[in-house]
Image 1 (cartoon, rainbow, N blue to C red):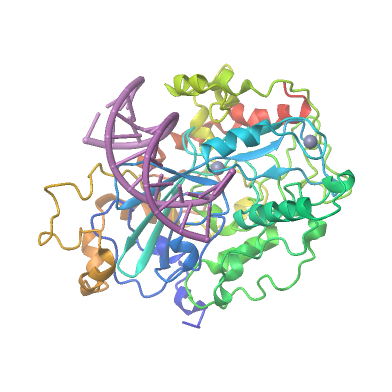
Image 2 (cartoon, rainbow, N blue to C red; image 1 turned 180 degrees about the vertical axis):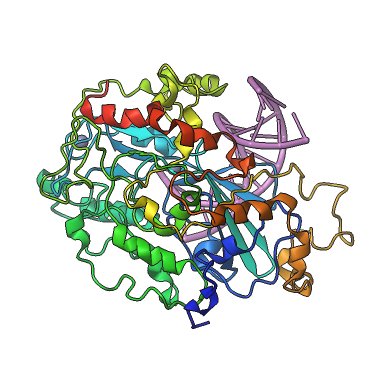
Length: 496
DNA sequence: CAATGCGGGGTGG
DNA sequence: CCACCCCGCATTG
Ligand SMILES: [Zn+2]
Ligand SMILES: [Zn+2]
């Protein structure tokens, strides 16, 4: 365990364990041999897979920095969660430190609706929920499955919005507020500044907390995306050394890397990065840090003021906005995009959740695809040839099998199917390490390799289409970025 | 109160 | 079938 890199030795391994082994959350049998596990990743992004130890608390809780809500996939063996996006100030005002407000959408529907009625603590304009549509127009989804002693995690989609506060931050803030409310003299006057905002500045250590970091694991946390650069002074505790973690495996390596990149990003800027295949995967790693970095500002964007002061690009970037958005409600208005979504949405009245603008525009046709494909990276990009590898994605489909249903399973029958997995491990183990190989999926393997093979740069387009389905094209169209991208800008500018 | 899970339903392709 | 979604119910902390 302690040796870090060894495992990776292979040059190829730049990835997480999960990525090294080719498996799909839907496989009837998952690799059981896993000897090593990935360190928990709080901010996964992209089409990535990780295998955590069943002992990992964060993994057990299916935690994520992103606001993920449970969604029914009619498969009890696989827990599916989809991203709710992020709540921002409709005017995108800048907080004192120059950062922007990025609240964590309440997971509970009811709570979320309430939340959306609130106003920006900084400028009082209404809050706006930016839905996630990083997966073909749909929210990014995360799948969790326990098998044997491992917790398999697979993500589908690339978040096309800034990171919200981490769960722990939100909780901390909440409690803080509560506290101060109760406290004898809480003057409302200044309250604004501190606790409220989604941004962290003040808190002493913003994140770090709560993810239970067992031991060394904390690293993922480090990333903390957002803080404005300045704030960053958080030292060292974050993850001093990337390379050594308990579990060797993981992507830690990459993760670390990311740290460096980190920048705050605020808005969604999706820049597209070339299709690079590799990137897909990457996000998780590299980006594990902070938002993907992505942001690199938008060159094109019109106004971008980019904060002169701060690192230019980064957060400040988009700056200001001001838009008058008066109606945030837009949400539904545009909801159009999605199928029935409408109805549901509308009916509700307000939800603004999904839908959104994303699609409305004219061309909308492919909104999604591109979206996904995030090529947000741009900046640093191409370079990393090596990195690439793994693309994979798997389709994550889950079969409809009911679980415990009646006839099926029952006891004796299939052992492993039973949900009682925990104990079943034996079986699993039984399968020796390689056993898995047998299982592997037909196609998958291919894919991956391919991806690896080439170097990236743009051309790459990945082959496997399957999953990527549409996305791929993004490459082609890169320039065309869909509206979504555009939005960002408009967003700042004035939005509508 | 909210976060989470679960599972029933429904829609569109 | 499949992929998504919405909604209510029940459990926790
Ligand atoms: Zn504001
Ligand atoms: Zn998202």
